[in-house]
Image (tube, rainbow, N blue to C red; front, side, top):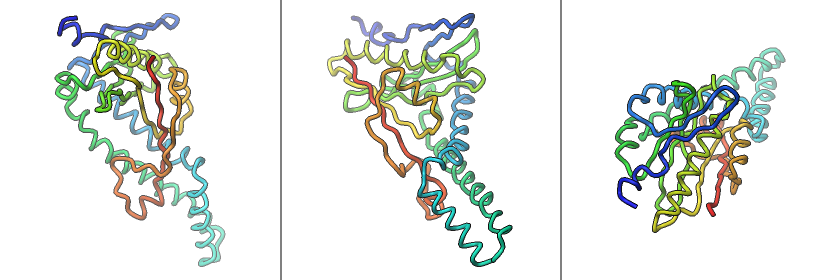
Length: 248
């Protein structure tokens, strides 16, 4: 196999047919930059509501804290009406800190600040986009880790094209690339890993359908972008799911 073969291996366009629409996955090009950044940013901002509100249902310790705040306020004021107003205020503060952390994370996502350099000129990081027609509708990245494994990262699908097997096509491209890389590399890739803090069920079903299994959950995960202040710890709390797929 020539050096050129190794460089282009696994990057051939990959397509999935769905009714009258074809999802085509191909390697990122500089002309995709604006749409890729838009989809990535919008996908991350969806995490604000997901973490602030849906995530609250999964954290009884936060529910207990907010209930205690409400009861304490009632004890000191003696007003049920004022105490009832505390809950929307608490949820608003929780939303603010979710927004603050997500924006901090976006600022620290250095690979997305210069996609051309970090993905076009790198032999350890790869980025693909999904198209329907000539419209870019999703993206996914792979990072080669020092332990020989690969990390699926940055998967995001345009909200207008979800439930159209775009995520399936992107995930299958990553696994296809990883298997080809494992067969051709002297330090064979043994696993593909990923992590997610989403509480939405659909992404978890997608990962499981692709063959990933959950190998661990970190409660109170310290998301990049957090400052770990007392208020932030009280109003921002997530759990991190670790997924792994072993290549055979």
